[in-house]
Image (cartoon, one colour):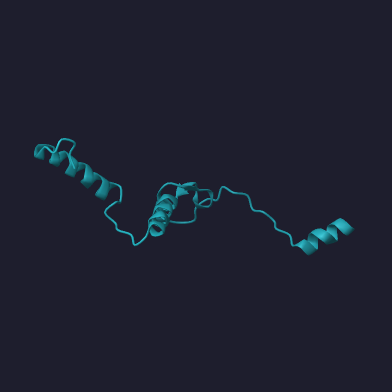
Length: 90
């Protein structure tokens, strides 16, 4: 693990390994690369992405809140193709 094979440098390498494992989630093992990518995507969605439908909070933070969260997106009215064609033919 060390550049020069010096056993005294091993403590530093082990410290870095510990940080990667326990602070960055690399202690988990996955059966495939695809599973690891999915796990990373779920983590990003829950911990990093700000959700307009959840009071502009991240999902993990919104989950801890009590009550109804304000929605910051506008309600859209969706019409069917029949409604569009009926309006265009009138």
